[in-house]
Image 1 (cartoon, helix red, strand yellow):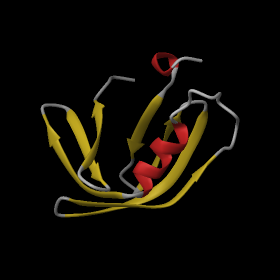
Image 2 (cartoon, one colour):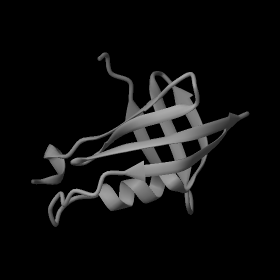
Image 3 (cartoon, rainbow, N blue to C red):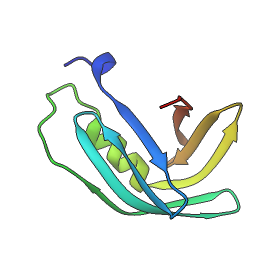
Image 4 (tube, rainbow, N blue to C red):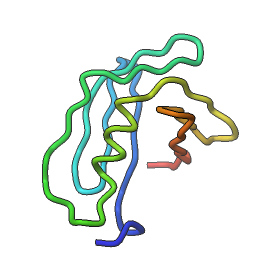
Length: 93
């Protein structure tokens, strides 16, 4: 599977839980917001093998290391690590 065929998404719920996809694996967890700080905790994932080109482990680690966030024009930016960023574009379900 090439990286363009991989799925990486996240949904935040009002009860402070989250779920999403990390390539071929599901993710579940919780989160806390305070001002523009984002803490993702109790993060779990299924552990299917997604192939050598999968970025699933890096994505999971990035979510776990989340520090702050910003929302601008329907784009969620999660900052983690040494000034690294994840970008999410809102999509209708």
